[in-house]
Length: 236
Image 1 (tube, rainbow, N blue to C red):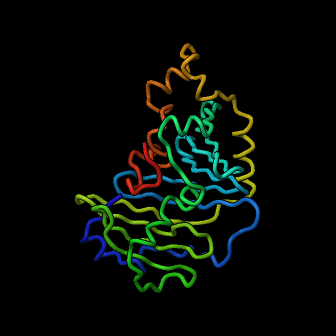
Image 2 (cartoon, rainbow, N blue to C red):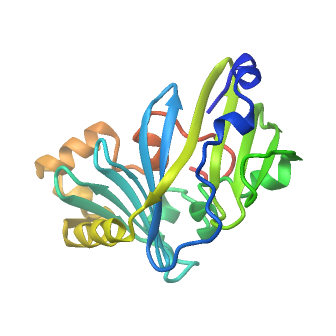
């Protein structure tokens, strides 16, 4: 995700961070709506409920749903809302695919570690947030981090003259979060280990052909065409 230097000058952090500045973390289930702009545009929802975290693209109804009831053995489901289907991956499947994730990494949009490598900078946008900026792995980042939610309120990057921005806009109603998780739980499920034995299933055949079954990148990125960046949240 990348941002032109000229745009950074025209739109300083205080001007782009918007008015969403939560002073407290909601109880129970909650979510945050992000607006994506740049190479790809659209809406993305970050959803939380207890030990569950999901990234949901309402445009194509594709989601990644993580369950960390046992943090050392996470469970993952790729959700396809239009077909009302889901593919479940267990910790052994993730190891086989070379996917390494942490609960903190998933919960923080894989951005928490950026706070350790970027430089704190002043900001007057949100009293409950801290701004960071700097270069990491040939990507220039600007981050506004919510101290109450422990997620980015704003994430901008610049690389190779291309730009993207993820902007938190508002909370997602907890009723909607509950409803989505309940819907996904009721969808027809297929274990990832069984996909190869069910290629006659038109839905699974389509997903295999489109590359959605192999876990190559998070759907939070796939749904919009580009990963946030290859900054070590997982490996393949």
